[in-house]
Image 1: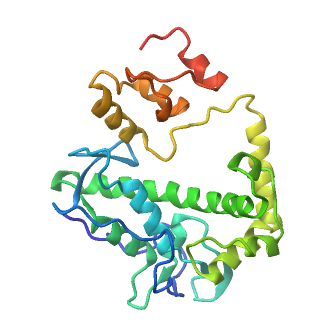
Image 2: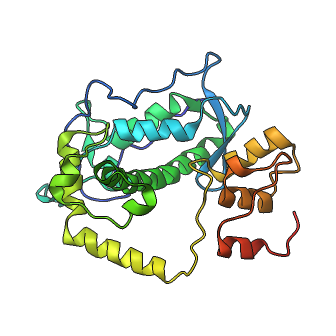
Length: 286
C-alpha cells in the first residue's frame, strides 16, 4: 500500500503560506535520485518514533536515508516569508527547519513539505496496518534531517573555504561574502544568500555561543561514529553479516560509537574512543 503526501496544511507551525520560488528545473551535480528497484517500491517497517527497518533487507539496496537527503536538498524552500493572520509579511528569512517547508507552495498550490513526502512515498511503501505510524515516523525523521542539513551546510562552506575538516570547521566563522562564495550543489542563489545572512547575524551567533557553552559543560561528549546509518539499520546490517545474536542493544550501541567499519570478524565493536561511552559499557559483557 502506498501513502500520499498526507495533510498539506501548516497548522503545526502557524502563520500563512505564500507562493514562492521554484527549485531549479534541472538537477545539479549530486542530486540525482537512484533508479528505483525493478521489483517496485521498497517495503519499510516503522520502528521507534523516527526510524524504519527494511522488510526485505539488502545492504546494497535502496536506502531511505540517502534518498531523503537528496529530496530535502532538491526541494529546499530557500527564502520564506512569514505572515501574520492578516497576510502581512512580518519576517523574511532563510528556511531553517522542516516546518519551514510548509511555508511555501509551488505553482500547483502544494507546499514543499507535501512534495517531499510525496516523493518519499513514490519510492517506499509500508503495510496498511503501519500507515499511520509510518507517517508519524517520517514526519519526525524529517525534522531531524532538515536540522542536520542546515547545520552541515555551514560546515561544508567553511571546509570549502578553509580546506579543513568537520572538527576544525566547527570553530571557524566566515564573513557573509566568504559564505556566499561557497554555495553548495543544491538550493537557489536566493536561498543560499539568505542562509549566509543568517549565519553572520547576531541572533545566530548568540545561539551558537549558547550551544557551545552547553557542550563545554560535558567533559566528554559521546559522539556517534557510525556515519549516517540509523540505529535500526545498523542492527539489520549486524544481523545480516554476523548473525541474529549480534544486533543486541549493547553491541549496537558500541558499534555506533566506535564505527561499523571498525567491527571485527565476529561482529564485535572496536574499542570506543570516548571515555563517557566506554565507561557506560565497562563491566558489562555482550
